[in-house]
Length: 610
Ligand code: FAD
Image (cartoon, rainbow, N blue to C red; front, side):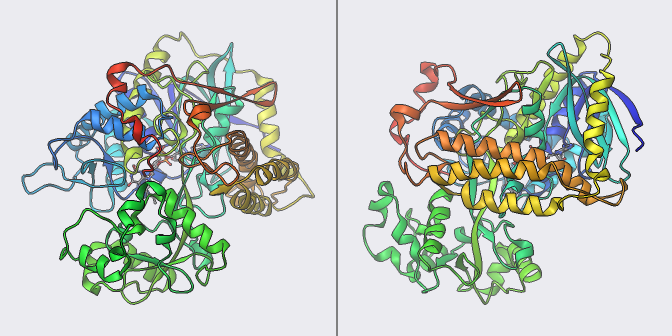
């Protein structure tokens, strides 16, 4: 087979063209670096484009009492105090400037009547804090960054998948990629690299992520020796579509419940009252809130109250409740719950939830103004990822930087809604700046070992040359079903141990797949190449979940149902590949200084937020 490849030299290579990658590329380029941006998908089709609700930043436009200190506290509290406080501080302090900067670059945010950037309420944020553009915030963010990036200067490699990172004397010196449409091979020499490859949720059968989220960035970092952290923490959003199968997992915004959507089981019962956690019991002590008339009066504004319907308990509580109803045999027709907002006037639904109306009408032939939706939990976000320096975003491998969902630290055990978009622009900028600085300190490009390049190419082409083997799609499908059943919302020792054994079997199967049909756009080949990453990423999640014998944020153990602060309160899991083996231990961030500690509300430690 033809093993020839093209060669490219860039001061900084950015892998990933979502919000984090674009913001990093802009900054690196503005700092004088020659930047190459590699993206597995088309430019503009990163995951960031799907973000709806908004970006969190304490602009204090809607409530003057907001400040970075309160955003810092909310983030730490939402992360169950496992976040890196240094990142939470930088994020809370710098996010407002990053939003203002986007406006200067042309982003058209929604406005308050006084002409300021509008901000909306979201779970876990004390004040209205999410700057937004209708329910298409991610689209506007990507549009603005792309336009800015192209003008600042960068070379874009669309539909190129990075397969391998090269190191020399411990420092990252380049990467290897292939072009997904024509199958051509490409060597990139780089003085530094920014990994901005997003999340991993395609490792679960039901997820809100798109096809790119196979965790390759996480795996690339791991394989190159970078430290990974907090991989047990995966956020399951309670309401994804569950029917028809082709759309399973697509997000049903929390706004549906915010606008009065009520959840019922197959017996027509509003089951959420049975799942109110102890800390919220008082709120639901009388029966008044149990009537759906009460919800209608609250939502229509006839009744002013700070109390909320139980459907608006936090994401993990609602997701687990739907899961339990299913386990008890009270699931909706297709295995979830009914979410009904049809009691509201048709025109109100179409005005407040236009995206949801069209989503259900076009994808499921369900008119949500007349009938209930069917929903169930969907894997939505990974809090774990590549460990980074909080000041520079450099990973434990010199010259390799990470930002966005690929990195860990900011969100601890649970991410607050809106804190991802602000994470991307805050830490994307920092990563780009420091990657450029680091590159400027490197003299010339390093020559990359020919033998290593040859090994990478040989491995890549293997599935094409095999005359026998499994269909990669079947291995991927089995992996996703297994992760859904054994490393899902509710975990136990037994299931996690089984999952680790299953992953060993899947790994063997994954190494023996075949993808006939040549190199020109061959999706079977692409999938065959993704399996190894999916296996190792899933293994990191299963192993970390097995080791943490408590429940906290996005990690729930049926056999250890409560948080245990005395043992786990400040322990972050850490994983590293050493001599081809997955090494696991715990570490802690440095103690939080008193001035920041005083901002925290330690008695809230166990309060659940989104
Ligand atoms: P992405 O935007 O996913 O970009 C990753 C990039 O890496 C892509 O270009 C991809 O092609 C590329 N890539 C991956 N692997 C490779 C490889 N091997 N080689 C080359 N390129 C590669 N968060 C909020 O804060 N507010 C919201 O309102 C919000 N709403 C959401 C709604 C939905 C439906 C979903 C699914 C998520 C939402 N989130 C929201 C979360 C947020 O959108 C993501 O966490 C965020 O966009 C991730 O950005 P990123 O830049 O890290 O990665």
